[in-house]
Length: 186
Length: 281
Image (cartoon, rainbow over all chains, first blue to last red; front, top):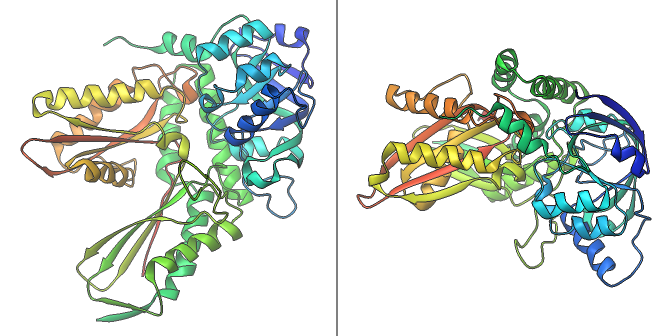
């Protein structure tokens, strides 16, 4: 049965081993943002053997390009972007310690295999629920690649950030299992 | 003949950009509620209720319901008896977009060059503007901000007459199936049939402007829309692709005559944020 689990970052092996697809997770702590352009730069650093702009061990990257913060708010609307565009980069980041990814939509087999190998999880935020997500973000600051605008890497302080486990460390995939369950053959 | 200063257009386009992003249409909310009642999956029901909560929050907090505030797609119906003066009409529309995206705290999502440079233009221009000349002396402006995630799941296929309506239905359902959870289901499926290569795509986009509580005015096409909707909702994809009965909220078809050799079929996928606002000057 799906359960609701509260986790704080960074994630440990023990944390992620408790998660199964369909579980609701509420994350508190620091997470980092990154999408297409930032991932390209991060992987270039990894390949060159250089340090990343933040310590990635046990950390979570949220695939998001937020809207600008209106006056008095730490961030604008901030729902997930589609994750498959980060598939070419994700395994290299998991190999150096990335423990969680938050986005929307299915991942490819290489990413799923890498999650199993590296004991990492993929969490789905609700696409289009960008104000609901923004409410769980208490602070946001750009820590790298300011020139990328909305695509810059931000450090977010979150409280009870809501998401659902889409791929666990056991190789399960909500996008396959969930759909199989409700598919009607015609 | 009516004289209209193009500078009058600027604040109108600005407001349409902001309103489209903050305030989702009642037709979308009603459809989500309707499907919520029918949905069997508990997870899917929870997703749909979060979407409703989000749309309410967006309107109350005056924030865009989604961070992807899209490319500004602008449809103009320009009365042929209007004389525009005071500057460049399309530049006025772009200025409205520029001001709307800045003052509405909307995300700027346009890069200058699609392949090599990909540098953000920082003001969400240029808008994509389509103009039809119509009788009369009014101007109708529709702003439909379109997100990238669902647009990326769209496709044009040049089919054969021999493929028939069955082939068209199969292609559309397959397109939705291959999209899975990527385009933020529950989606709206815009279908453009006929015309030629580029017109089919534009028809599919225009089809997305039809309110979700309306069907095609012709009975035979309304039936095809229903058939596709039923088949799509049997795919099991469900809200966000987590599994469920609610994969699409609606299917909308537009068609035009076409060449004897051709049968163009375009599918434009729209996420649940089926946003568009219009004004008449």
